[in-house]
Image 1 (cartoon, rainbow, N blue to C red):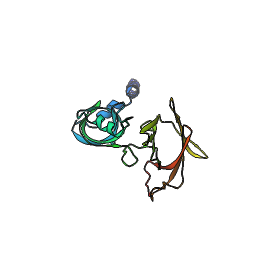
Image 2: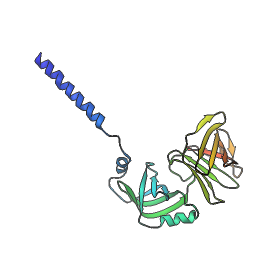
Image 3: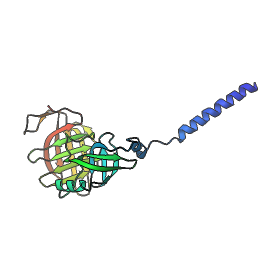
Image 4: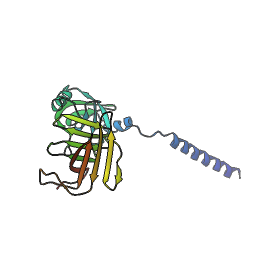
Length: 224
């Protein structure tokens, strides 16, 4: 009887320890995930979205942001040439080293304005205007709804808001200190009027009382 009681006590203690260890295990942090990217610290080619305003890059292979050390001292200058009035996040191709808490850029190959073709970070939608050629990016991962007007060289930036579904379609509404935007995405055939491309979504935009119409591209969608 004593042997049976002792066996039960040992098993109970083991189960209790296992449960406590599971409870004490901390969830993975961004830093711990970054370390797993490349433990060799090798110099490699990378693609990503660089944000000049907070000096971070979101790498294409994992969509996590990491601080940047630009040893070339050229990246910000190149971006300022693209956006002289209001520098914006850009698509870049660089050679560098992913370290535990920062990304060291050794060489810059390409710097381009973001668009639905080159961005490697998943997005909700891109809306493309014609005459004038404005564009809108809606991205939960990048936490933004951005309306860029190349004629004014101005970007209307809003933090991402979750959409609502109603009889009109998918509706995004956002505002900042000075501006307000509403975007209605409808699942219907759309033509941009400038090319032979056909899109699967249309978009109606109201920015500060001004109305725009365009076609929209959902992430992962093919364009015919």
